[in-house]
Image (tube, rainbow, N blue to C red; front, side, top):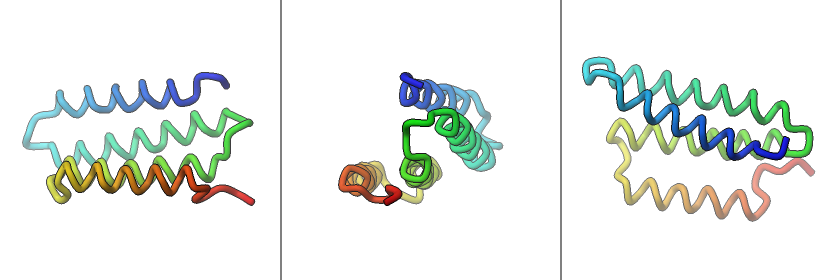
Length: 100
């Protein structure tokens, strides 16, 4: 599957658009449900790609999902979310989560 991360990007964009359409009274539940749906969809996309490491990619996506939930709910500031994303990215590039 050559376009795995492109599909993940489109999935993230669709989730962001869906989150913008939700009324404020259901925002908390929508943030949780939409982000978990994105995580589940990314699992299904990664599972179809035989050449990528499912464990490492899912650990990265889980970290990204947690950062996104905390930022959307206002628990984490945007600057802290960028710092957390940078740390997650460096950890991933350094081999974190890869199967030996």
